Length: 449
Image 1 (cartoon, rainbow, N blue to C red):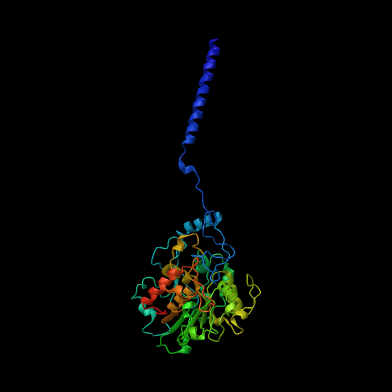
Image 2 (image 1 turned 30 degrees about the vertical axis):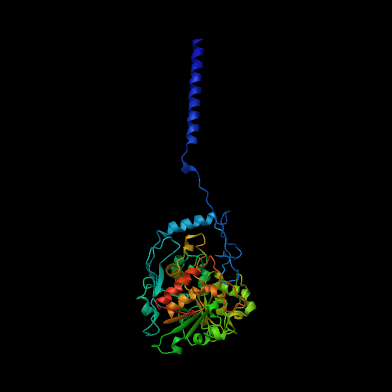
């Protein structure tokens, strides 16, 4: 009997201990620290995101306006978990990568330019290639001579390459520029494709914006450039003769001159576009007379490379062959640039230059949003700022001004269309920049006042 009683007590003690242990574990779970709960990661395109970018090329409007515009991006996709992980890896890797000295085998010496401000987050990349290109004139009243005395002196990089050419494609440069997407770098582009396409840009005419200056005038004369946007402010302006009187005339996208010569002039020496904006312009403005880029003996074509399709179309134009692949596969480039187009008439903006413009001149708050990878200066802004870095004196016509609501979006609009504001550009910031450059005496901006 005593033995059975002892066994019962022992079993009861074990049961009591097990019960107390279970209660302890239960209480511990109820009081578990909050950091063990995985946070919900909200992806682009999740319910509640009011500003959507579709993968069909449409853009979010700020505020909503008409959708016809050449600068709308293509193939935009929601951010995925894999992309976020990739971005995190790129960021961690970028904090330890050195910026080694780089030199080119041909042409001017190329070297890195140190950043004037912190380059974080990593995708900003405020470090650029620099090359020594001797000035083409002795102009005593040039932009470069005046910029140091203005508020823009600290952000202006005098020797940054505006254009890229065959000599810029090295394995070192490919590794460096592969960090940056779109027009700001070579991310997602195959190295072999870059070598094959940029190899056609192998002459001084390809990396000099004003390549025919020696045949135009003497060295002491200032190079005067008219940069013509397509803004409605030019309608009935009677500025055509004034525009054509400049040494060089820059135009972009749906640049229609026929029938509008009195207001916008007829000459075009430099035409800036991306393949995407060119095709969109042909579709959008055919009804008002746009058939394609201007074609003349003095016209140069400057590609703004947003995608590999820009490199492929450029190579096809230089070699007089159909486009190899992509959306323009099989198309004849002479349809756009004329039968007489040759490699010496082709140029392409350097990714460093476009990224520099974004970082130093148009650093929009959009870079803090999920749309940061598609944001860039508008095509017209790249054109105007390129002229600022290559011409001695710059006059700007048809660019957005504070009274933009008084004018239609374009000078050739049949009826009034309000100016469209889109997420991949910051036109309000560009408006402010044009005013500041005008007040600083670096450009002469046309207004109605």
